[in-house]
Image 1 (spheres, rainbow, N blue to C red):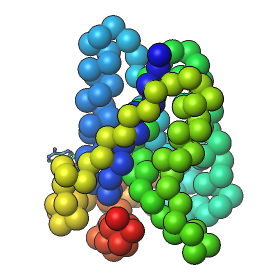
Image 2 (image 1 turned 60 degrees about the vertical axis):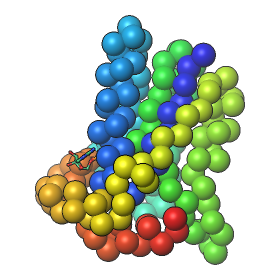
Image 3 (image 1 turned 135 degrees about the vertical axis):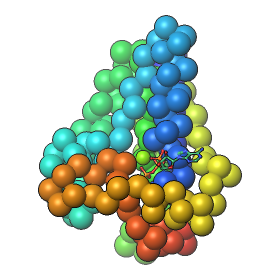
Length: 157
Ligand SMILES: Nc1ncnc2c1ncn2[C@@H]1O[C@H](COP(=O)(O)OP(=O)(O)OP(=O)(O)O)[C@@H](O)[C@H]1O
Ligand SMILES: [Mg+2]
């Protein structure tokens, strides 16, 4: 049975690094793991975090399709987004809930890898500051998001 592995944690907490490590472990076992990242899809789409509803809905559609295709092919999918709860129209939304439905549809098991014990807010801010700034019009994957974004996201934890 394929697994849907969901990273969860603040920016710069180490999700993408852990996702790649998990992918390497899966590969060592002779199988494949597809790392699926909203930021990588934003880069494929030529947009950034500020694209708004229009581009974010496309990112969600592409990401969901990729995860479904992997799971249905018996390939583990590793989602390395923050997957943290956020407030929308006054309601707390947990992105994990949507993934539980996708996994259920595809007969996959779900594992959540929470990075909150791996790096606290201050450590995330330190790690983030060492990352490159995004170049206007360039890729955003692995780039700095800034202290303000990290502190704002930490408020919902
Ligand atoms: N265990 C660790 N110890 C020290 N530094 C780490 C560790 N894991 C990752 N890093 C470093 O911290 C930075 C952020 O890591 P990473 O890109 O994996 O974070 P992320 O949670 O995916 O961030 P984002 O949400 O912005 O995508 C990178 O420079 C990475 O090399
Ligand atoms: Mg990442």
